[in-house]
Image (cartoon, rainbow, N blue to C red; front, top):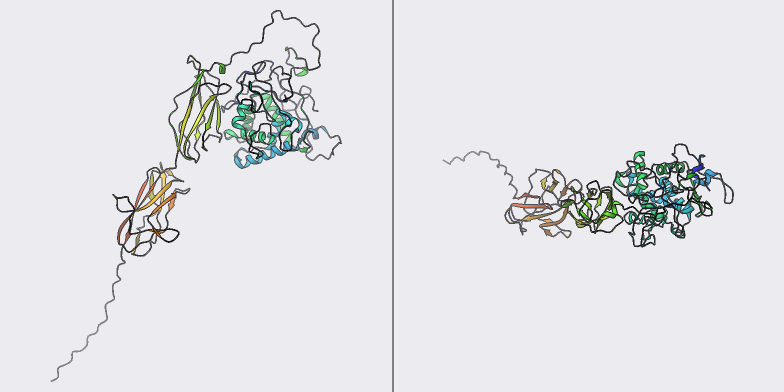
Length: 569
């Protein structure tokens, strides 16, 4: 068992201060290590002063600024290849560096998946291990089954406003078994409202389960890799960690374990991992805040002669800004339309108001993309949570259109409550071009019954930029004023060699180019028109000439003067 945090100092890491007051509703707290068979209430949630940049991205914390394990790693470096065998005592560094086998596998698989899906994030698995250690003691020492699901749920306290923030149920008890209030869930301690959008299926069983270490590790990886953060840069890594739990002491603790695991680690059997002992919400013993009454631990006797409270009062739950919100209103959002593959130029704005129409600041608004679409918010996520400003307005991140066209909805809700709120309709239109031009000015000519030497190639642009993936149609038309298909003159050939005079399902390539198949001519001579049209209205008409070859001039026959026959005399 590791030494208590209050009894050990680690060079380079700040000691953890403990706040005795309850965490505000904006910081939905939960305590790691409270399991489903743990019926005793924790006395208060711990928190430290928030780091100033932690909320800069506008997203809610994964854990809601939960209490966390404060144990720090040993001063001695771990041995990456411990020589000890089962049953043989090992050095403290070796014991601490051991990570339960299934849990370790989950971290490594999550990091490998992120390396493929978000390579620019550069997520090290050791960061997931550090957070897992601080949040749940590596799933309570690796108490998981063969599929990675914890043996018994790891739950935080009931967030009923009594010593903790008030967060009424958001998942109908699906994840935490509580249909009245939310509780943090699983080895990575996600609150249900965050898991609803951040959850992932890490073990491929078709279920997103916060109690499964593979699912939770992958979700944590995606959470840390949002906002375009590059975790190889220390500033971005700090931002990502602080977004998980907004506390400078939490940051220092996670970074200490991260550096420790980077020095070396090894696998230990599931269920045999070292369990932490110190927690940020521990108000007993050496971690108690000076001047604050210490809460007796189980088995510790109370003062036999306590001083009576001359005027006892029932605990009061202060009303939070979220409690005052009656509804959400649109705050002047313009029409949301974008071409496939392009960014939306307009953003969604929502305002929080009381029943009397007064604006409410400092509440979290969640924007969720709903419908059959691959459009995301900037950073690749389908949900974003933004805090309202002093005018009560939350502006969602910019939308990035995917390749699926059509309508979808962005739904605005307030975190922790159910109030009337607007839905925003958005539309993704197909790739389009506004200009078409040939890539060559060579005249296109052919003799009757022959084939054209040059193939027609055109380039599509949209607002002077290359227009890729634009659908196009090419038709040999009767005339400039009659766009119906011609029944004579030049033609293309289908796969069977038959003549066709209309080509559909054409599409520009990455350079905006379309190269048409070879053209052939029948026996009709004259000037013919090939019309190419694209989505977006760009049109180009190309002239084709079929004419008989000019006859080569015949050489003049050679003649020689012959003497005239003289008449006979």
